[in-house]
Amino acid sequence: MKVGSLVECVDDKYQQQDDKIIFPILGETYTIRAIDFSEPVVVWLEEIVNPVKTYREGLYEAAFDIDSFRELQPPLDLSELLEEKVTA
Image 1 (cartoon, rainbow, N blue to C red):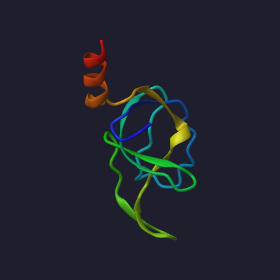
Image 2 (cartoon, helix red, strand yellow):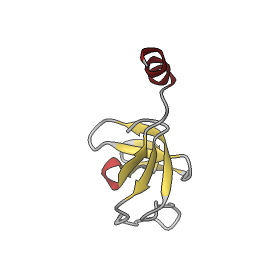
Image 3 (cartoon, helix red, strand yellow):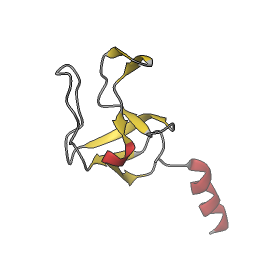
């Protein structure tokens, strides 16, 4: 998965600690807007923008575990597409 990937939520069992946070819904499709590859790997979604909150580590927007999603379609890589056309 990478930024721009279309993903489907396959696990919506989040610990809802704040009623102001919007959570992904099981079976819904989203677009990855950003990824943080530190442990655990988390993603932010184009369709869900939550308010920035203060956490122990500082100010952050709520993110979601990457394992809660499955990739539906990787974003198009035009260089790969052009290479396929040239070698065909």
